[in-house]
Image (cartoon, rainbow, N blue to C red; front, side):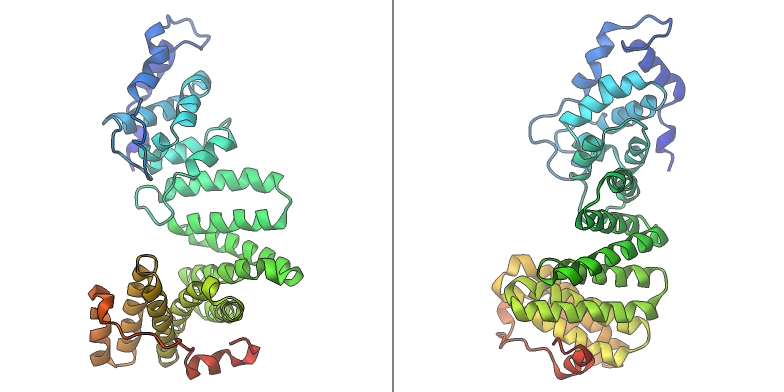
Length: 349
């Protein structure tokens, strides 16, 4: 929380005045012009992965934070030092941390292409140090993009990406508003062209149900997650290989939504179906699907415990650490009758 205070305004001003490019009555130091590039030079391949520190100088985080803070008051540092450095090495911004990213996104004249390059290096999943800064970067990109983009699908993706980042940062109310916008756009597109956009609508509904639950609107989340399951059933019937992972994910999430509103007995067969599908997928591609199977097993153990079937929950909760060599072979992993009954009104599954 204190990082934006470092180092100090006097030090930042001295760096800015020593660097050529300002119009103040203060002698510049030619050495300072190339100093940031030399100080922050990293070996090729050093920036592999979000916030990668391998090969980066130990002072890189502090130096980039200092440049960003000084750039807010000294435009020549932004144009001649900070932006060129980050354009060459976007990982430097990510390595500087969430507070630095937040301040960077607040610079008035920063180019959207530079922010996009930095956003591409952000972790896909939650990251405790980066989430707030990532939300600031993506918010700035979405603000600029939504002002210029007219294509409905592109606008929906902007809303979707922003909703995810805001949710990771704990800004759930804002995330819900963005998720609502995304669902509305995908719904209209899917009505016009189901083959092209039904997949996007199903994913968006799944995300929106999670966002509703995060703000405490759990009863509203249930029919939304149920619709996501129905659409994924429809898609999986057309192309099983492409859409089965999405169906398994939506079943796991729907079981959680049911449990959250007290419909625990209904949640058990739904979570069981998710485990069956995940097991079948992991048998085909262990590396890709084993982590997701572990998640579904953990959730299913919780659902069993919720309804008092604690003895059955124990071996299920132990299984995520077990080898797939001991798993029984899948026999088609059909959706169980209870799930079929719950989904029958739409005639999808």
